[in-house]
Length: 163
Length: 350
Image (cartoon, rainbow over all chains, first blue to last red):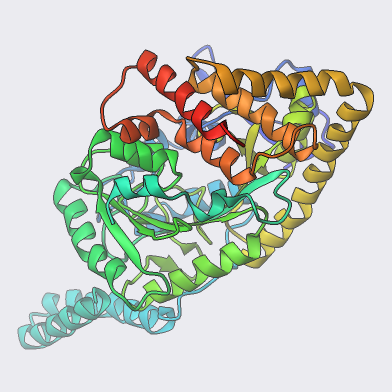
């Protein structure tokens, strides 16, 4: 992202200001920030940093109410704490996090180490998602024998995943 | 091993023998990992915290790992012992102050430590003396791979290792190089260094990590970006930046000795005089003077004090260390006397 003032340098300073009850964002390069009288703080906490990078609260009110079914936190709670509640949040808040990760890391795709267990695991995870959907449909069609079978399979996989 | 046994040794990284040790104190690498299917600590109930510790602890203590680790449950330690672990850089301040079930597994030479239930379920760290980024990463990578054998880490093919804070996600890798930059600081050049590092997406912090002020001209430079790059790339980029800072600091050191040799000598010898004779000294003053002494040693303004002794003085004169050595709780004034005496004794006869 380029500096909003000079449109030349890369913006390294991201500010959130409240003026007249409205949140405003500014993205500046070091030099323009200094000229505007914004000094670099030597120490800043991760939440300060995140605070500066978050989207304004008023813009997307619905997103803030989305709640993760596994850990129970909402996106707005994440914004306050700057910490996620569980691994599933990365899927639940996916589109917002993609924007945030782009700003923090300049990337949204992992390019490092992969645990050697991951392939088998990813396959199992996918099977789990599919089985849960199957279960819903067989319960609807009242095929309880089949449902019991699927439930057993889900339990087995969940146990394997919890190894 | 008990926590107080740490007093009879000092960490491998304090030896002061590593490459570039005139400027670089230590290289530290850290990996953030969470367990699959356990909620992150942000929302974890006391029961979940206990479950995580119960699940992880035996796996850290088992003999199959590349390093033998000793586990300390922090709730079983005294406040002074917890503070001592912070002063040794084995746990973070946040981990010290937190509540609930949590712990740390430490290797005998203190080069490796694994915090359990800090911000993430596991925080692995390896510290090496001087500039040894590859060596430090290789060691932590071996430990991480070994742990994968018995623990299932939260991972997504797109997001990588999943962490409580999105600033760590991906590799979960934070590399910090602790440097002593007294000449750059004395010549008021630090602002320049900080700004150029910030432009390159590196953060600079004080001696004890996030939120701490630079003490005694020690600065920790760390990568900010953890995603979209491989571990190797993150390391090789930092390996290009650090030599620039070394060159910068060394050039200002030479300028000091060329332009104002008397001023530098006076500063170093005054520091030595006070350290050798003071009867009361605060932690801040001691750190400041030890920093000047360290500068003098690397510039040969003063000789005969081993780096190891000096490095140890920085750590052993911290409040928790002094209280553990004296085996009692001391108020700040008492600590100042004990600290002055400790330094005097260590410098005697050198």
